[in-house]
Image (cartoon, rainbow, N blue to C red; front, side, top):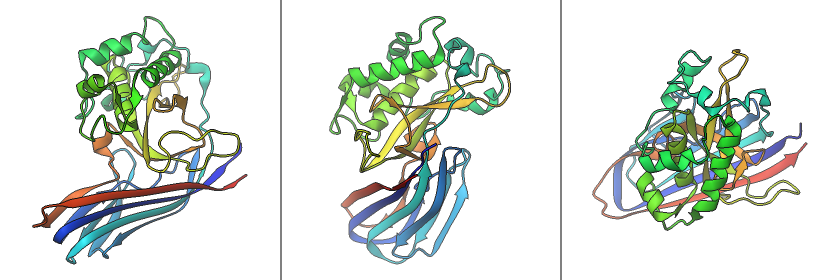
Length: 302
């Protein structure tokens, strides 16, 4: 299968009007090793140089970088550089037509792999199970409909019914606020799709990552390039009873399945689990500025 090699660069810069004397941060900026994605090299650099920096694996298997900067600073820069090879995910489609009602891990905990998917079927801080989300999802999740057909229909409807508008929401926008705005960005559309799935008992996870800045030959440029991107993976249990199931990656922002243009970094219940950078600072600064620069460039296609 054709592989695309990407050079990924992600720089987050914080500037302050007074010295920061102590900065503790957590970064989710290292791509995951997956069956369809191989991380050849990766490096996370902090400036000023941290007094302490380490990496660990979190509950969901994401690589997390922890750092503490003790040198007084008014500018903090976190730069992640990686080289990644990606192919389009391959699925066993024999389970795609199963009725969506049979894929609910909390309703049928005896499903193979249900114990792994269960916590992704419940509400999370940014994904409420509102009545509006239930009703919106119900239009696609009709009785007996095939799971993947219903999931892709929901993706189509979110793409058609909500405008891409980076002024409509904020990083803390709730599901009711997204419905009210009828617009948002990739994070909002992912949260909305998760709410619709989970309100009906399906397991689905929030995925953060990147889209190629320059798409491979013959493929269109997608919304979300040159920035962090977010999409959704819905759990599809195997009908045979073998294995823990598979996760179908859907991007409601661009109305498509995720393919070899997508670089996966981290996943969790919602954005709050996997923001690119978060932390705590000690300072008397009254103003701060955040800038983000992302570049995902195809290096070589095989």
